[in-house]
Length: 180
View 1 (tube, rainbow, N blue to C red):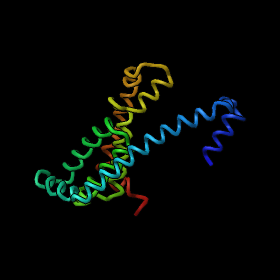
View 2 (view 1 turned 180 degrees about the vertical axis):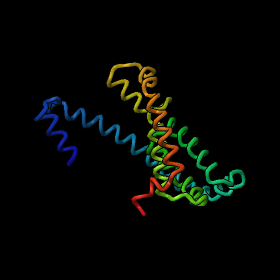
View 3 (view 1 turned 30 degrees about the vertical axis):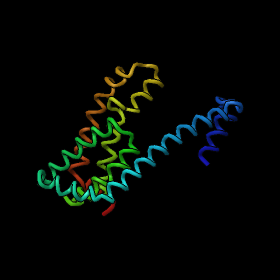
C-alpha cells in the first residue's frame, strides 16, 4: 500500500516522476532489494552455523573468564557495537551479532529488551560514523557537500548521542519503564 501511495503521489500529484520512468526506477529498486536479500540470506546462514556449533555458549564461558562484572561487560559491548555500527550494515549486524550476544548478555543478567535498545542505539550512532556511515553519504549526496564537512558538523550531535547511549546503557529502568 505504501508503494502504491508513493507512486500515485510522485507520478500524479507532484509529477516529479514521469510514467515512462517507472520501469527503470522499479528495476533499480529490485537490484537494491536483491542485494539486501543476499546479505540477509548469507547472514542467516552464518548465524545458523554459529548456533549449531554452540559458539554463543562457548563465547559466554570465554568472556566470563575475563569479565566478571556486568558493567565492564556493558562497556565492552558498547565499544564492540560502536565499531560494528561503523563498519557493518545494521541488518547484517543484527542477524550476525544478536544470536551471539544475547545468550552472553542474559548470562550477565541483562534484560533482552534492554539489550535490543542498547544495540539499536549503538547502530544508529554507527550510521553516521566513518568509514561506512551510510547517513553521512546520504547527507553528502543530498546537500552536495563533502563527507568530511558533513562529519565535522555532526560531531556535536554525536557527543549528545554518546551521552544518551550511556544513560540508556546504565539506567535500564528508563528503557524498561513502560514494560513494568
